[in-house]
Structures are given as structure tokens and as C-alpha cells.
Length: 439
Image 1 (tube, rainbow, N blue to C red):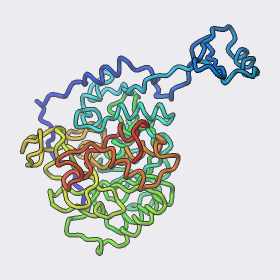
Image 2: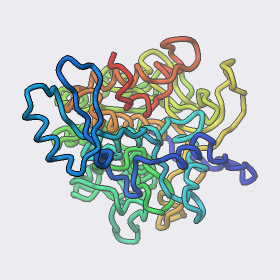
Image 3: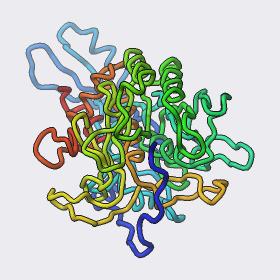
């Protein structure tokens, strides 16, 4: 099954990256978004009316005391083609939240979450700006099912709720391990994954979530040790699809020697979920194999490999036919000759607030989470943002969303598709940009 968090991560002497100049500029120039992340409002030039006359190509700007009355009067005249208020356009600014990262300084999340903002990240701030402009900040309204070890979304026994999921919208889920409606986490893996997708953002607490406005469906299919069988996972997939999930996140894998013939119930469940309109996203695997693990290898699944802080393939990430995309997963660079990659060069891992401690009864931001498990939620969250953005229409098919993610990915490695990086590094900003043509 999927990896448990590895010990170590970034050495204590490793400096955190500074906020990029582009982000600093975006913060200074941001005019579109309010502190709450509300959608933009139409504004007009006070007292101005623009009039167009038949036979005259030049528009005329009038300065009047009562624009509404003037417009009504002009529109009644036969020679007037149009009479409208002078509407003001705004730049689509990047959204820079106030979350403090590991300290107390507002906005320092960007110094920790290289996976969202750095040169090897997924361009989250610009994507957030696109969604705010579309009126659905953070992917609001899209239902994402997280099939994992559960989520610390509510206090349960000695396990508290994550303080950075307080503002996240959760919908009804299920625990297929304990057979009850409450998919609680006692491991930390599921909470970490869910937080990357939809952790509360701009709330002054810890870090940010890529699709912070999405609705999360917690579905527990892995036990407290991070293991689960195919029959249970299949039940979870069917549950998610039957209850309206548009995206199903599977940050899990079977060993490379497991073929589709050994997990038919899961393959059938994934096929049914796709037919019902759900996008299924899964991990390529962490064995550095030349074959993608199941369920990611299935044609109805978007398979995701892992990249490092340097934009290189992670040394543990599986590759091979059927790999679709890559996303930040942390760890050392693979021994490749790709530009900027250095064998044994270790970048930072993926940071999120999750359960820590021997008994998993406290919360913190551990440095040791790396893996294709951590890469998958970046793609799931971007899929949610694409759906919410409307760039593909009001209810895009899974095929359309997958094509959009692949067509807008940043090409890495050899030109075009390759079995190391698939179609490339997912780019949330480009995927949600309404000016980028739909292929």
C-alpha cells in the first residue's frame, strides 16, 4: 500500500525560500479580491454614459448627473444604437492569503508551500485569482471525495479536529473500516491529503489548500496503519460516485505485481464512477519501478507521478506507460540527466497541517511527508478548480477535464508526452485561465 510518512525530510539548516518577487508584486497590485476572497463586482465610472449612434463609428462619452435617466431617454431615440454605463475592467490579480506558515507572520505560507508558489509549483495564486473572478473562489461547490485513512475533521475520542479544517465544508461520508458514518483519522495521512486539497485559506492559521472552497467527502478505506483491501476500496469508490462526488482522490497504490485481474471489483467500481461523471485520480506508486501501479494504471484513472522542489522526477516515483501527469511530491531528484536535476539532491517535502506525535493526538506541520500520495491531491484539487471555473462549461465530462489538465500541463523532460513525466507538471493557473483556448 501507499507509503507512510518517511522520517527526516528537510534538514533543520535548510533555509526556507523567500516569497518570490512575482508574488510580492501581485500582493502589492492586487485590486480584485477582498480579504474574504469574495468575487469581483462590476464597477462603472461615476456619471459617465457611453452612446453609439447609427452611422457613426465613434462612441461618445457623456458626463451626466443621472446616468440611469439619461440611458433610458437616449435608448428611446431612433438614431441611438446603444447607451450604456462606462464599465471598468480590472486585472485578474493573484490571490495572496494571510496564512502564516510555521510562524505567526501573515503571508508566510508561501515560504513553506513551494509546491503551490515556487518555480516547480502549480501556480496556485494565479489559479485562485481566476476562480475569484469566476465567482466561485477556491472551487466552491465542487464535491471531492478523499478515500484514505479518514480525515481529522471532527473531534473523536482523544483525536481533536484540525484547527485548519474548521472553515472547510464537509459533506456526509462513511467509514468502511469501522462501519459507521464518521470517517475519522488516527494516522495523519488522510488529513494531510485532504488539507492539500481544501484546507481553510486566508484564515490566519498555518497553511493553505489548493481548492479551499471545495466540499470534501471523507471516506475511510484504509485502516489506522494505512492499509486497506480492494473490496473495501471498491465500496468507497461506489459510495463516492453514488453520493455526487465529481472528483475521487485515491492517494494509494497496490504493489507493482498486482494486475487488474486481481482487483476486478475495484476496476468495475472505477469504471462505474467514471460513467457517473466522476474524475478518479490515483498515485503512480513509490517503488521507482518502470511500471505504473494499480489502480492508477487503469485507463479510467488519471495517474500521477511525483516531482521535487527542483522540478525533477522524485527518485521513488514510478514511471511507465499510462502515466498521465506529475505534481509536487517532494524527496530527492531521480538519477536523470534532465536540466536542473542532480542525483541525490534533496529538496523539501510537502507541508500540511496534520496529526503528529506518537499517539497522533496533536497537530503540527511535519517535514517528512513525501510520495506520490502527496502529488495526487494537487491534481484532484486542480480538477475541482477547472470544473468550478466554467472554462469547460457548467458540467464538463471527466474526459474533458482530463484533456484540459494534460493540455495545460508544463512539459518536463523530453518534448511532448513521455513515460517519466506523462504530459507534464499540472498547472492550476493555466488550466483555469479562460483566455487559454480549449483544445
